[in-house]
Image 1 (cartoon, one colour):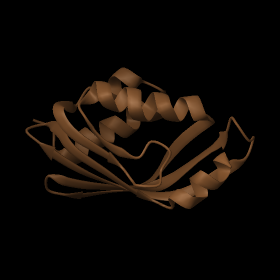
Image 2 (cartoon, helix red, strand yellow):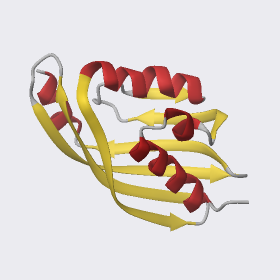
Image 3 (tube, one colour):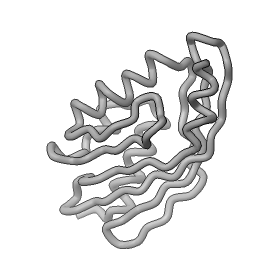
Image 4 (cartoon, one colour):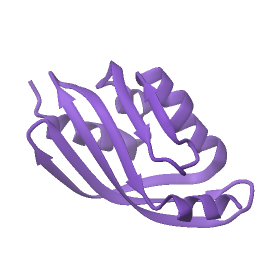
Length: 129
Protein backbone atom coordinates (compact mmCIF):
# COMPACT_ATOMS: atom_id res chain seq x y z
CA UNK A 1 0.00 0.00 0.00
CA UNK A 2 1.24 3.51 -0.80
CA UNK A 3 2.16 5.86 2.00
CA UNK A 4 0.11 8.97 2.74
CA UNK A 5 2.93 11.03 1.25
CA UNK A 6 2.77 9.03 -2.01
CA UNK A 7 -1.03 9.38 -2.22
CA UNK A 8 -0.88 13.17 -1.86
CA UNK A 9 2.10 13.43 -4.20
CA UNK A 10 0.09 11.51 -6.82
CA UNK A 11 -2.70 14.11 -6.47
CA UNK A 12 -0.27 16.98 -7.03
CA UNK A 13 1.41 15.16 -9.93
CA UNK A 14 -2.02 14.70 -11.57
CA UNK A 15 -2.74 18.40 -10.99
CA UNK A 16 0.51 19.30 -12.78
CA UNK A 17 -0.59 17.15 -15.75
CA UNK A 18 -4.11 18.63 -15.81
CA UNK A 19 -5.46 15.14 -15.08
CA UNK A 20 -8.73 15.64 -13.18
CA UNK A 21 -9.45 11.90 -12.95
CA UNK A 22 -6.02 11.39 -11.39
CA UNK A 23 -6.60 14.24 -8.96
CA UNK A 24 -9.77 12.69 -7.55
CA UNK A 25 -8.77 9.01 -7.86
CA UNK A 26 -7.74 8.71 -4.22
CA UNK A 27 -10.40 10.90 -2.61
CA UNK A 28 -12.62 8.72 -0.42
CA UNK A 29 -16.40 8.87 -1.07
CA UNK A 30 -16.88 10.35 2.42
CA UNK A 31 -13.81 12.62 2.42
CA UNK A 32 -14.26 16.10 3.88
CA UNK A 33 -12.65 18.83 1.75
CA UNK A 34 -12.55 22.28 3.35
CA UNK A 35 -11.81 25.50 1.50
CA UNK A 36 -11.07 28.37 3.87
CA UNK A 37 -13.72 30.92 4.86
CA UNK A 38 -13.36 33.99 2.65
CA UNK A 39 -12.09 31.97 -0.32
CA UNK A 40 -14.26 32.11 -3.48
CA UNK A 41 -15.43 28.50 -3.04
CA UNK A 42 -15.39 28.45 0.79
CA UNK A 43 -17.05 25.55 2.53
CA UNK A 44 -16.72 21.88 3.33
CA UNK A 45 -17.61 19.42 0.59
CA UNK A 46 -18.01 15.67 0.97
CA UNK A 47 -16.72 13.26 -1.67
CA UNK A 48 -14.95 13.64 -4.99
CA UNK A 49 -18.00 14.72 -7.03
CA UNK A 50 -18.72 17.59 -4.64
CA UNK A 51 -15.06 18.66 -4.75
CA UNK A 52 -15.04 18.69 -8.55
CA UNK A 53 -18.27 20.72 -8.78
CA UNK A 54 -17.78 23.13 -5.89
CA UNK A 55 -14.02 23.63 -6.01
CA UNK A 56 -12.29 22.67 -9.26
CA UNK A 57 -15.07 23.70 -11.66
CA UNK A 58 -15.99 26.76 -9.58
CA UNK A 59 -12.42 28.05 -9.64
CA UNK A 60 -12.15 27.31 -13.37
CA UNK A 61 -15.30 29.36 -13.98
CA UNK A 62 -13.92 32.36 -12.09
CA UNK A 63 -10.25 32.34 -13.08
CA UNK A 64 -8.07 31.94 -16.15
CA UNK A 65 -4.86 30.03 -15.67
CA UNK A 66 -5.66 29.16 -12.06
CA UNK A 67 -2.72 27.13 -10.82
CA UNK A 68 -1.21 25.66 -7.71
CA UNK A 69 2.56 25.30 -7.66
CA UNK A 70 3.89 22.97 -4.99
CA UNK A 71 6.99 24.20 -3.19
CA UNK A 72 7.41 21.58 -0.48
CA UNK A 73 5.65 18.41 0.59
CA UNK A 74 6.04 17.28 4.19
CA UNK A 75 5.02 13.84 5.44
CA UNK A 76 4.05 13.08 9.04
CA UNK A 77 2.58 9.60 9.07
CA UNK A 78 -1.07 9.76 7.95
CA UNK A 79 -0.86 13.56 7.74
CA UNK A 80 0.77 15.40 4.85
CA UNK A 81 1.36 19.13 4.38
CA UNK A 82 1.73 20.77 0.98
CA UNK A 83 3.16 24.29 0.82
CA UNK A 84 3.00 26.35 -2.33
CA UNK A 85 1.43 29.20 -4.29
CA UNK A 86 -1.86 29.85 -6.02
CA UNK A 87 -1.97 32.17 -9.01
CA UNK A 88 -4.35 33.13 -11.76
CA UNK A 89 -6.33 35.90 -13.39
CA UNK A 90 -9.92 36.74 -12.45
CA UNK A 91 -12.13 36.50 -15.55
CA UNK A 92 -14.50 39.21 -14.35
CA UNK A 93 -11.83 41.85 -13.65
CA UNK A 94 -8.71 40.79 -15.53
CA UNK A 95 -6.72 41.15 -12.28
CA UNK A 96 -3.89 38.74 -11.53
CA UNK A 97 -3.23 37.35 -8.07
CA UNK A 98 -0.69 35.23 -6.26
CA UNK A 99 -1.20 33.87 -2.76
CA UNK A 100 0.86 31.59 -0.55
CA UNK A 101 -1.07 28.49 0.57
CA UNK A 102 -0.81 25.50 2.88
CA UNK A 103 -2.81 22.30 2.36
CA UNK A 104 -3.21 19.85 5.23
CA UNK A 105 -4.17 16.31 4.22
CA UNK A 106 -5.24 13.22 6.18
CA UNK A 107 -4.85 9.85 4.44
CA UNK A 108 -6.14 6.57 5.86
CA UNK A 109 -6.11 3.13 4.22
CA UNK A 110 -4.69 4.62 1.02
CA UNK A 111 -7.52 7.16 0.61
CA UNK A 112 -7.69 10.91 1.19
CA UNK A 113 -10.08 11.39 4.12
CA UNK A 114 -9.61 15.09 4.88
CA UNK A 115 -8.24 18.18 3.18
CA UNK A 116 -8.02 21.66 4.66
CA UNK A 117 -6.73 24.80 2.97
CA UNK A 118 -5.06 27.81 4.61
CA UNK A 119 -4.36 30.88 2.46
CA UNK A 120 -4.57 34.66 2.33
CA UNK A 121 -8.13 34.83 1.05
CA UNK A 122 -8.03 38.63 0.75
CA UNK A 123 -5.43 38.44 -2.03
CA UNK A 124 -7.73 36.15 -4.02
CA UNK A 125 -10.89 38.13 -3.25
CA UNK A 126 -9.23 41.39 -4.26
CA UNK A 127 -8.61 39.98 -7.74
CA UNK A 128 -12.36 39.41 -8.09
CA UNK A 129 -13.29 43.02 -7.19
